[in-house]
Image (tube, rainbow, N blue to C red; front, side):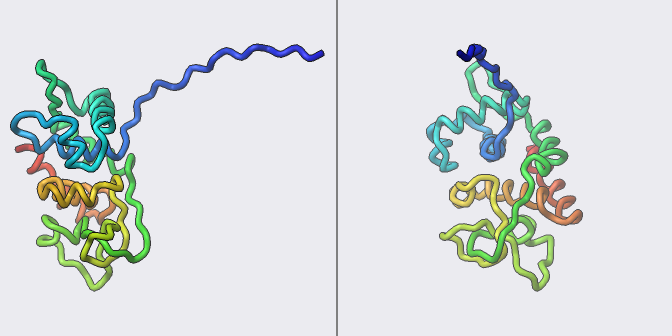
Length: 187
């Protein structure tokens, strides 16, 4: 007969990895100056679940991109977020493009960059979104719910547009976006 060895449980790697929706949550929280929004209100605004918001905050805290004060309010460490977006996020969340699509303008095709960069005669980048009014080439957002969240919060839309220019733009577009993002995160 065959002798079977019992297998011991293999420990999984406890490495914490930021997810794209975590950056959306961090960018949204970076806009907060008043009382902390609840996970439920953030979930509604960002079209995520409250558990996704909670998990994202935990991962961001482990990555030292935010901390919780004595009252439990999540406070973004804006300098750390700025450095992460400027130097690492485009490698962690590279731009993914697709074919022509209908959607919402992003990167150099949307404010605040649209006023600074003259787009050529080419097709502009858009987040694929059936509720969008622009046509262009698909530039997939960090997370599928980003277009809906951006429609609900204009300041968040600008931060996400700047992030898209950093992760997928030309060197000139990246430099402009980094400068504009720095201004917004210093406030």
